Amino acid sequence: MLTEKMEEYLEALFKLSCENEAVSPARLSEYMGVTAPTVLDMLRRLEADGFIRYTGPGAGGGKGKPSGRARKNIVLTPKGERAARALVRRHRLSERFLTDVLGLDWESAHREACRLEHVLSPEVEEKLADMLGNPETCPHGYPIPDQNGHIREEEEEIKPLCDLCPNEKGRIARVEEEEPQLLQYLASLGLMPDVNVEVKEVAPFGGPMLVKIGDAQYALGREVASRIWTRKRRRRGRGGPR
Image (cartoon, rainbow, N blue to C red; front, side, top):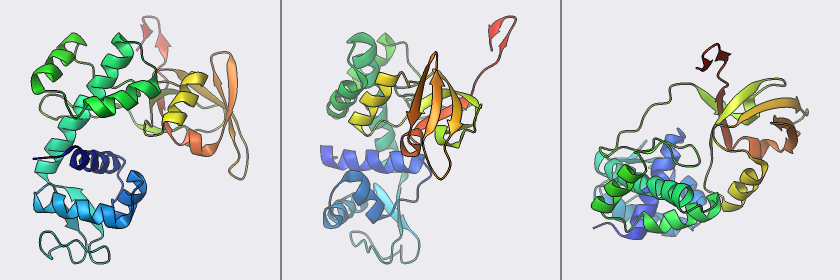
């Protein structure tokens, strides 16, 4: 049976893999904010229970004996993928409920959803989805897996705000959700999904970007801008937005 801590590791592996990252034990340790020995101990448990496997040289060394030197990357097995997607679904549905119905701010909703994701029963989960109208994304713009774990593919290419050029316009698709203080800061600036944004200036040598939102302009560091994902702004025709 999965413990809460095991679920957190599966969720972390899923999120990192969604960003097309090759996940090593060292990267997972950094992401989770725990020591390498702690990560390796948990990986032994997850591998022994069939939730993960290793790729790269030396990956066939047997269950329960991960080697940071020989086994380069960690991947979820189909069993681990199903468990991770179910957890992500509960988390993102919870965030929708907490923001849309209870009116919590982004930071508080994310924190509370981290608790609820471990305790929601399948019955409550589906009642919640029905009540919310089966939303496709969480408040931060990330897709919500359906009952079968399927995730809707992006219809349009998305790229980080830091990759936009001066005078280029976009529409915010999503913002990274793992840092509460960053969420609070972005929300205070109005940098939220479905908001139009325009890059006015880009300072040289990795300097800040000047971006326009409505009538306001803000200077954003490249690191912050890399956490905001955009898609091309939709053009308006005679019939309104397409």
